[in-house]
Each structure stands twice: as C-alpha cells, then as structure tokens.
Image 1: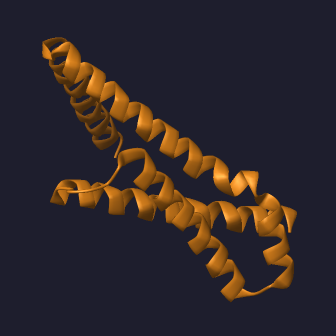
Image 2: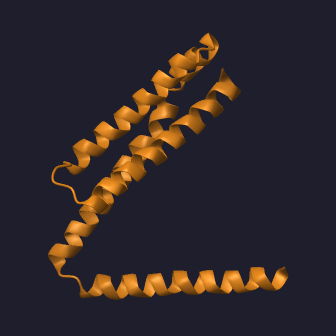
Length: 130
C-alpha cells in the first residue's frame, strides 16, 4: 500500500508541475489584451467566491433564528435565498448572456458548489450557535 501512495504522489506532483509549466508558457505567450481579460475574469471569480463565502457568515443571526424555529421549510427557504443571492451576484459580475455550453456548465457547477457550501455552513452555524 505504501508503494501505491508513493506512486500516486509522484504522478500527482508531476501533473501539477506540468500544469504550472503549461500555464506559465501560455501566460508569457499571451498578448497584453488577453492577459488583461484573463486577470479581469479571475478578479470577478474571486469577488464572487468572496461573496458566496461571506454571505452565510455575515447573516449568521438569520441561521440561528431559523434553527430555533426547527422548521425544515424555513431552513430550505433560507438556503434557497442564499443560493439565489449567489446566483444574482454571479449574473451581475459576469453579465451572463449568450453563453456556450461550457459556460452554462461552469455556472451550474458554481451554483451547486455554493448551494452545498451554504448548506454545510448554515448547518454548522445552527449546530454550534443555534
């Protein structure tokens, strides 16, 4: 079993190193306009991740109120509202119109990730503070 872990570690390290090398070569071969567009997109993604990560913590008092009511319906509505706000922020940041299939897939993946995060964080807050 130890040898398999070692092999998996070496393969994973090699894959990450290859990704970094390919990324660096691609970065230096981009035009300044392409780099600016890439940085703008990365910045918007980071802003959205920040909004999605902070929202349940910034409104923890709602979670504790819902937890005290012990209502699954209210909890579901709260999680849906958080996910809706995450989706609205995503829509505003990226001006989502005329998306490709890959773009739609990434948006759905992001919203499902936000939904899962909201559920786990709200459950933890309700358990610890509620």
